[in-house]
Image 1 (cartoon, helix red, strand yellow):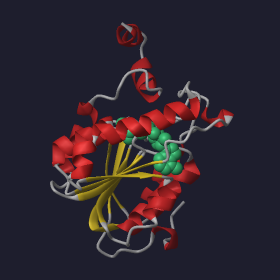
Image 2 (image 1 turned 90 degrees about the horizontal axis):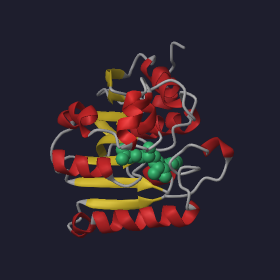
Image 3 (image 1 turned 60 degrees about the horizontal axis):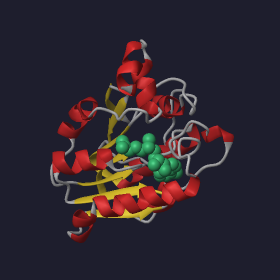
Image 4 (image 1 turned 90 degrees about the vertical axis):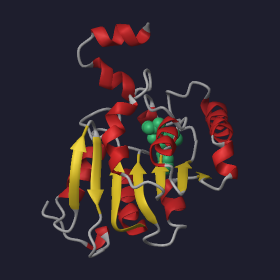
Length: 221
Ligand SMILES: C[S@@+](CC[C@H](N)C(=O)[O-])C[C@H]1O[C@@H](n2cnc3c(N)ncnc32)[C@H](O)[C@@H]1O
């Protein structure tokens, strides 16, 4: 019903998806899932209710999938329309419930040591892994510029040469004021970085074999 009403207003569907009113269609990220290697080791930064985590498991049957999210309610007005701010009407209780629902949803995968749930901020959690540990990282956590920039830097460090650094919501505006786009564009301007594709709001980088730390590289911007 809500979905049909939203569809009648031009341009509203993407906005509604971003606000969590209707779920993002798996088809929009199908091309990305098809590109990720099967049986690989990956991390999803920003898990929410685990819908995309489920898509990842079904599509590529990862050897290890690390799910990273603090499930922490943000009271600041900056996050008024974020899923983990004003969008979580039940505050921290709701965030705790989301975390518990993830543990139940992936219970079987956790016991099979395929899925590991890390409750914490991406910068803290990623740092605990050795460099070049992952085949890919999917960045969909805090979309503010400084956070995405840091997530990109750390992901380039933690992904193997030839691996993928990818993520969601490459778009102008919204509550994060185009922070994802700004950080991704800056990263793409870097001569040593290979931007593979931007499609359906998804961005995909491939780490070159030279493996230069992102924060040590000079950009053209
Ligand atoms: C857009 S949702 C993730 C949606 C999920 N990737 C999907 O496609 O179903 C953003 C999530 O990022 C989490 N988050 C916020 N700040 C974060 C941070 N610094 N590190 C990791 N996750 C964060 C929030 O708690 C929220 O669950």
